[in-house]
Amino acid sequence: GSAKAAPIDLSFPKDFRWGVATAAYQIEGAVHEDGRGQTNWDVFSHTPGKVANGDNGDVACDSYHRYADDIQLMKNLGVGTYRMSLAWSRIFPEGRGKPNQKGIDYYNRVVDTLLAAGIEPYVTLFHWDLPQALPGGWQNRDTALAFADYAGFMAGKLSDRVHNFMTVNELRCFTDLGHQVGIHAPGLKLDAAGVNQVRHHGTLAHGLGVQAIRAQAKPGTQVGLADNTVFYCPVMETPEHIAAAKKATREKNAMFLTAIMEGRYIDEYLTEQGAAAPKVQAGDMAAISSPLDFVALNIYTPEWVRADDGPAGYVTIPHIASSPRMASPWLVVGPEVAYWGPRMVSELWGPKTLYISENGASADDPVINGHIDDVDRVMYLRNYFGNFRRLVAEGYPLKGYFLWSLMDNFEWADGYGKRFGIHYVDFATQVRTPKLSALWYREVIRQGRIV
Ligand code: PNW
Image 1 (tube, rainbow, N blue to C red):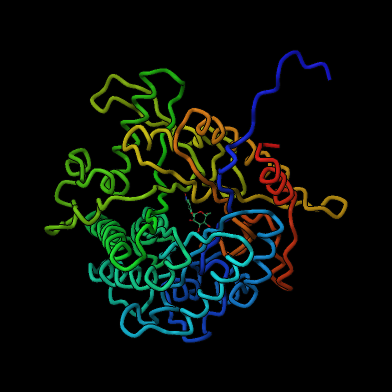
Image 2 (image 1 turned 135 degrees about the vertical axis):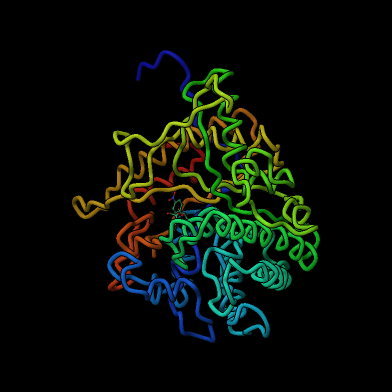
């Protein structure tokens, strides 16, 4: 080589925590086993026309039986952490009431097997599979209370070994996609007031969940949530556009992360929603804004914003047809979101610890000479990692990263047709095969730098 200067440092701090993520309904299967109760996703996926190809999570990756093999995959990767979710209806088949010991036993086995493999579990308590028996689902405020009971109960059971809990995954997806757009369970298209009330109940569940976990878990247990904040990136890196991105990020997330971090629904949201604004009871906002130990972000797609002279101070730019996308039409590629998203959250609210709870991509998996060479997924990850690297180098408190996903799984309304795994799953045989992206990620972890 004849490089003229030292290479740019592409390394991450030695104590940076590398992990992978999954979720219960997407991988476990065994939906009728050991007393598990029915969920909204069982009902939705068995309703004709709701999920691509008529797919459902009845078997999925069969991880309920194959969890030890899956933990071996993680060991081979060299990850130190695993983000998993618990199926609420395995613990409380009716959503509340009498706990099901077999469900508790299952998660004890998974946690103990992880720890024996040197992998630390990060547990998400709700990743969208809601016990069907809860009347009215998220339209009913009581569901938030039932969630808190379940969250506190499981934190009490696991916190001797699990030190990090996330209350809910992606408020915006299970509220809006399920109750406004109707493409996720329960498939409703409510009016604005109905949607805002569901959002409030979801956000309240998070807050009451934090309180219940703190009350029942061992002291020192770390609590946060996995949020899919809508992230606004400045069209260029100048103070006026950065300020515009910050304002947009705060206002566009008013019903979720902004409320959680600020303890109120900001005026912009209340004015915009008018009579459709959520009905809030005394004490709700204090619960919703319970202090967190960390904020975890799911980062996929960027939004773009520029400064503007109008009253809002900014204009957002809709996704453009010519923008590059991965295999899911919504997954617009924009590596800069990996930098601007966490930076905006830091500047707005200053959480002391940040994690990336999900990042990854759907892609086709070409088999070339016997290898699954998903070079586009690797390219996607490499570019996002470069931006995480910049964020860390500038001192933002990003402590760890969970790649979505360990393996191909039930991708909600897209069924098994969209693959986000770094391990290929042959769903007919349940054989898992590392893709190039798994080999690449293993090397990143081994060297502690982008390769
Ligand atoms: C997240 N969107 O979902 C979920 O947390 C995972 O369970 C899921 O498998 C993964 O990302 C990949 O989709 C999202 O439309 C679903 O913008 C939809 C969107 C974003 C995230």
